[in-house]
Length: 255
Image 1 (cartoon, rainbow, N blue to C red):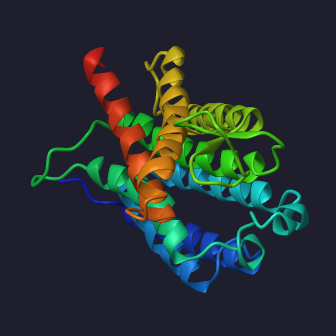
Image 2: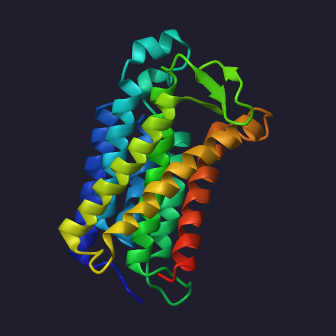
Image 3: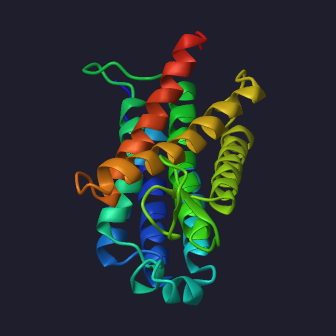
């Protein structure tokens, strides 16, 4: 069984304390959100990789920047996140649950079959990509003048569950690409973890992350609008679906 070494553990704990403190001070997360972020960070850093925390931090900063972008206008439209865009416990759990599970399943142990680290890294990237794609699409898509229901194609009010627009869809694709490319570079440049991993495989977290955003919209237009799911559960399911699709694709191509 592999156990985290002392130096790595100390560094991860220090990084998580810093991460939790900064996200709270900068009002990216509230106190409960920062506490949960600390716990998720510990699991991801100790079971996955310290570098995975960097990707998580990049996602948090990008999401907060998108949330704060034209916040007053979004607030006037009734489509802004409450509390000035500061996110709480439920939001952190919704976006961090799947990445945490992937990290746990990447940890070598005698009790549970796990993924090789390079496979887990792609799955982790996919989960972060899906979370970023949906968040950025939602935050920018509400500024669109023309929005349509993904299931019917009929016009709807911006911010409606299941509503899609050219701006939001473009933002979703850009966010998935940005997250996947930056995540790839972090892992490759600083650890060589993806050595021997063909560059074109970056298409997997990019496409599956973008697909996760579309799944989120479909679930929002159907189950969420019927009161069967709330926003946070839709996020967990869509991120989970994107990650499973990535795993299925990697299995199908024999990688």
